Length: 309
Image 1 (cartoon, rainbow, N blue to C red):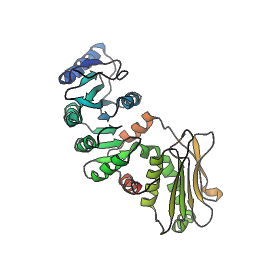
Image 2 (tube, one colour):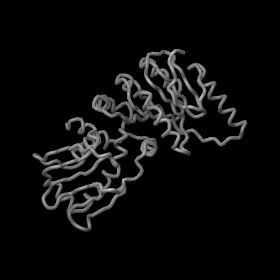
Image 3 (cartoon, rainbow, N blue to C red):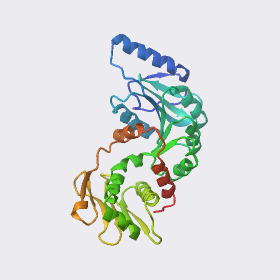
Image 4 (cartoon, rainbow, N blue to C red):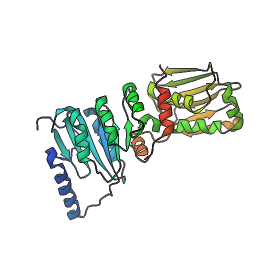
């Protein structure tokens, strides 16, 4: 084994050869039974792919899921055909694996009788596409997602896709949808003239904009403007404003509070919505609870790719 294990990744684990991983799992399970230590029923395999600095927080997030029993497989790319592996009783980390061997490693380590979710935090696009055949769900989570989004659109028929930003936008989407449940607000949709979104993360803004364009009538001539903010984000977005006939329809973060205000001009349409838990553990936990294709996300992603900052 020539590559170095990532410092800080699975610090309580034991380093083994790749060929010895399953035997190590069996030994650790036997030791737990002998000590009569509590065990969790395993319900899924979560495969995390990414650079070393993004695997450590991912491993911590999975550990914080508590009673959600998963086998975690954490892999960083490199040049090795058989890289260093570290094993705990619920996780295995493989450091420095060449992309060409990624598929084989995942196929060997996943629990074939249980659902498998791939949490993609960075790596080669070719390896990303190859994993679509092994994943029941593929969760994208990268800073610059354009190439990944393009690859995902081509693979919709092979597995279920999402982006971790989609989970972070859930309450924003729900709040706006609830406003449009009001007949007077819904009628004004046909008069839409402009949408302005303020956000620290441009990709989140584009994804929300894509959802808007793909889920409501979009009058000819209506414009879309996305403005970046430099504030430390307390939420995925800072504000969303729809200009229609009559008062604007808006969602806006409240200063100093973990909530946003949804308004459509009349007092009966006002809503105060908590942003909810937005930690990495909470977001990935939410996505791991989804098993099927999300057609609303797919339509939003197709539209988001056409929106430029």
